[in-house]
Image (cartoon, rainbow, N blue to C red):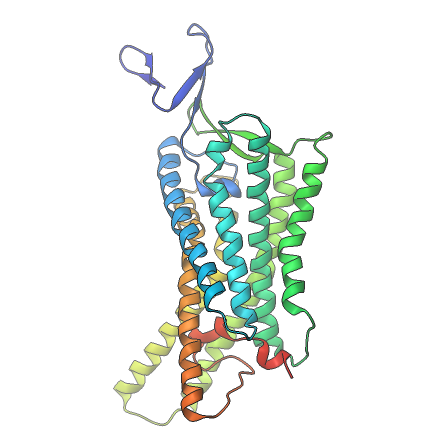
Length: 360
């Protein structure tokens, strides 16, 4: 990086390669990495690269902390009954914790020796990313069975089968990718060039562009289409349910009705936003930023997706609070309540368990 007017090289965070009389001199830097590189390959301007990196690392740090907190709370506070919904939420939190933790290691992995360390970090990041996508799809599948299909069939070893899919499918994909190292090296140091500069940044990630697009984006696209369809169906059901409850409500004063309608609309909207984060449809911003650099989309992508674990932690806390309130109401009335469809309180949606349907 040149300074004016004496045309000397700055050395803050960068190393130059090449003789001073050569026309092309590479400048390799050790800046942090923005979260968007997981699904985007387009060069990013240096000033935006640094800002996005700070946002990404702060978001990943917060998410790693709160997802670990979610796991600890779940382990020490779960009851003897099986709450499948909460178990799936925590499994997704575990995948996000792994992704956020390993992502913050990619800069370190690219600078250490031996080279297999960077390969291992890159493979671990890829595995955790695929686990996140898989558990997001499982969230959507569970939501479909719970609120749309509303089945009454007992599924043997339901959570075990979901866990084998959530953790096993990505493991097979990454293991096969590592197993063909003699034919093609898919993981390792990846030089990312910043736009309009000769600066490059080394990260531990997928090195082959064909592998990146053919597997990563295809896998994500399938998950995104499925989850978006479930989200639209559930959101439609929520708002239809609210319309039915309004029609059947007792006639009240106009002001009171307006306040109730506004409150219910806000809660429904917040529920849909929560489900959007839970099902990972915010990752769809990668489609809007592909092919060209759209900085507003990049900022939204890094903020929403690097902090997804934090948002899910809030969702789990609200769900647990609603569940405790319902349990307390059940004990006070001494009347067992079984949930067979969409709850009348839409914010309780993620806390609904399959136990009422799966257990006889």
